[in-house]
Length: 442
Image (cartoon, rainbow, N blue to C red; front, side, top):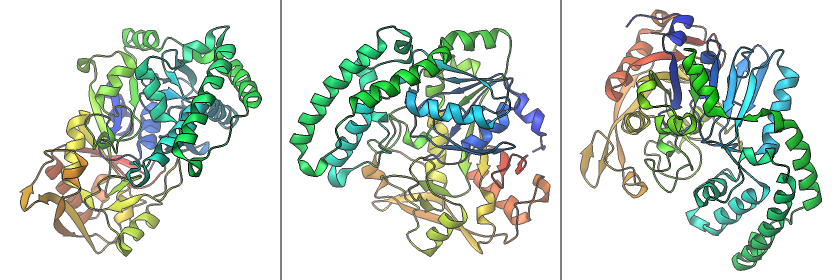
């Protein structure tokens, strides 16, 4: 396959969605930062402050949760889309940090239809997770699930509500109502699930201040996207989480509360699938997962610990150590399918530089029967999966300074071609470090 230059790769398609083929944490932030240098619009399509995207550029290192990763392009409009849930206080903190550190940041727009994460959502999140006991699903505790639940119940606050004169009064009334509900829940769940009582005066004052700052940023995102389409501008979608955590097609209940794939892009923008030129699946050269749920190739030994330490595998949102394992073809191929991925960006190849041998999971054995593809994402089926491995030789050479695909060690290229062949999706981008320049194309 021919190697593409930075500019030609990111500009050859007008509408691109960047998502994750696995369980999240594969480096989407870096890819969006690269794509955004050539884009007019960058849209965060799903999730909320539970998604942590790390971006390293000329302004420093940023750990983002709500701000789209295209913030460093002054020519771009960064949109928090309709499918997101926004913690207004957390967004204001990130927004202030960007404004202080970036010389000429992008313009920002919060969809007036994006739902808001409120203080009570975080408390409810913690209470519900604690009440599950051993069945806990490993949420980040950021209030994402309860906020999406209120959205489905058609009772939540949306960003557009912050534009109403009555918003602070409505917020104060709901705060009191939710406090009564939480007090009752705490009694039902028992004292071991005790949570602190709201400081209503402080929260109302904080919301007033936040509203004043965010007021001019809230608007009609659908209109903005349609205007960009009419002008034939380059549009980039940025997913949160990963395809295997999709609310409906992932391993329920160990999932997120939204849709990371092309479906989430549609929900957040109003675009038709036919309007999207490509979907890039950020895919780690090994595999990780945060939280509970099946991870068939998980390594609970020194090799797994080595992957974690060399790869700095700790959550950007929670700081929790990520579970690690060998590359899983079966899970990744399924993720590519359900997310609509048309090509792969392989990240963190350099983490494998010093391994003498590598393993690739090419199938599962479940109840004595072998499978090369996922037939059921249900955790009960996945938990029984015993990985079938293909062992390959490592390259044992430093790749972190390589900037051209042809300069990779032969065994590294062989590894990439093997993954490409087994997953069935072309690998077009390779990343060997967090810096922008540590990326090349083939």
